[in-house]
Length: 66
Image 1: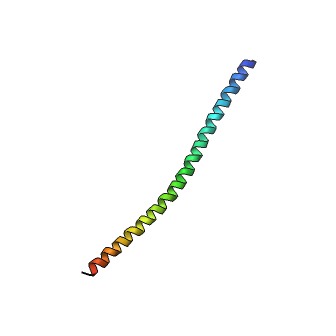
Image 2: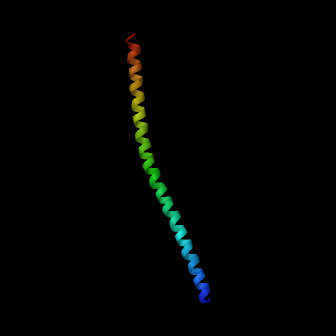
Image 3: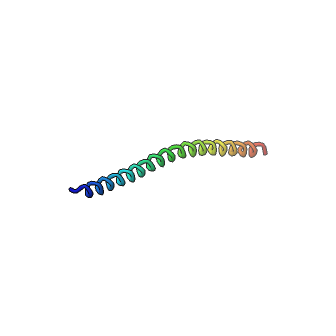
């Protein structure tokens, strides 16, 4: 292989590795974001269930007082 061919191959490998690194970094960041989002949504859903249970208890009490 000539020096020019080696340089082209080295550049192509470097570009490939840089692209692969960016894709892996993006994938890891998305996984972390989804994990944090899931945690927030779980807390929200729990609060919503508690609120609905509270409202249902109020309605039951209101019906019982009639």
